[in-house]
Image (cartoon, rainbow, N blue to C red; front, top):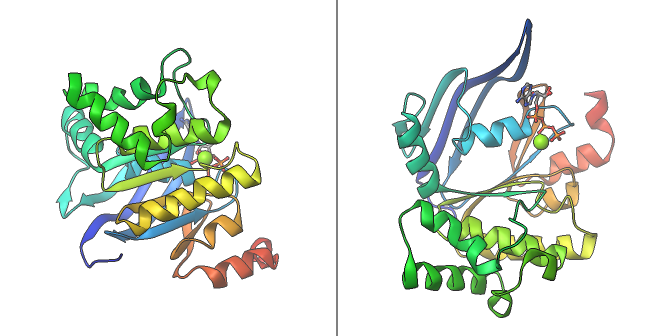
Length: 246
Ligand SMILES: Nc1ncnc2c1ncn2[C@@H]1O[C@H](COP(=O)(O)OP(=O)(O)OP(=O)(O)O)[C@@H](O)[C@H]1O
Ligand SMILES: [Mg+2]
């Protein structure tokens, strides 16, 4: 489902990390537009700036320079509190490490973002159970992480990301810690969520993963070197080893 609404607009965004005297240029002038309902894959070598870009898009980090608009509103000067509210409303995050708390049930993990949003009690419980049902885990809501498989743990993390009904799912290597069959199940789930209207931006090292997306962006040394609809051409290009020669 792709509509015309522009959700995300980055214009010439840089991110410089200062480590004492050393400046690391993690992003060097990235411009990018993402429309509602898109499914975007981001690839690139280790250190090319993929996670930095995801953190900037998801408002976990600020650009050093450049502009960032969400639904047409410039957000780079927003206060911390305003950014946190916007982040909570618009973005759900999933990482390679599931980042679940060790001792609490799946339902309570999923309720955590609701607590932050001031939703408690029965409403919170029902929303968490609905989110777990969306990822096929209705029967596992009382299990703790050590009572779940890796794939189930990632599903809990996805339910947690979705419980606030964000418009965008930001997934940074969501299958990186899973075997290929479990990884494929998680990708099927993400395909399904996308088909129901969720905008998805996913970092991956796996060209077969990128092939599921409608669009593939390739980063190199903090810059976009390729951005095309239907990334099959770029995937072929990467699989064909032309990537390193570029
Ligand atoms: N907090 C930080 N402080 C200093 N430098 C950082 C920080 N985070 C990232 N960097 C540097 O910025 C560059 C981009 O890092 P980033 O994590 O975005 O890469 P990546 O493409 O996600 O890599 P990977 O595939 O290994 O996850 C790297 O050179 C990295 O060392
Ligand atoms: Mg990374």
